[in-house]
Amino acid sequence: MQSRQKPAHKEAITDVSGAKPGRKPGSKRRGEVAIIRPGIFIGNSISIGPGKIELLRQIAELNSISAAARALGMQYKNAWLVIESLNQGFGKPVVTTVKGGKGGGGAQLTELGSDILATYSSLEQRINTAASIELARLVQLASMKEVDKS
Image (cartoon, rainbow, N blue to C red; front, side, top):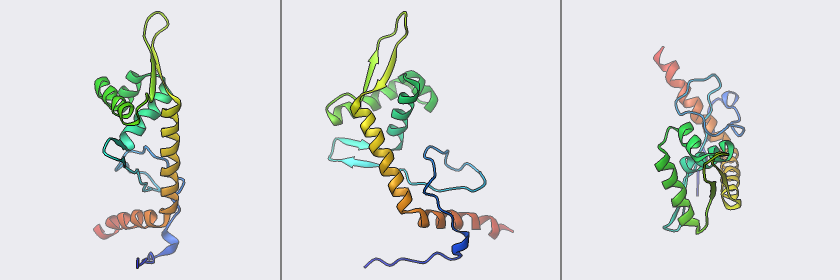
């Protein structure tokens, strides 16, 4: 049987279900929030987590693998290795590319890539909503470190 602890000082706990993923860890902001960014393992061949998902988000937004890699501070080759690992794991491409030239190149998510991104984002939102009380309590506990220093 699982025991549930009641958080102390309920009035100090805020809902974090609307937290946006992609915030820099350790960033100091008023109203700091905690979020869960899950890592998912499907069999032995597929792993999906925040890094791969952020790369897919950036490709969808920027329509470029190289621009997405730059935005994330990663090497282009590593971005391609991430995409290839997803392609191999799912057995189909997650990104399509158009070769450069006069009109320039580009990249976009395939239907599969878009579905992976949407499904992960939905799961992430549901997990964070379900855990909002516990996440808020962790934020509260983290803010107590500043009070203890006084």
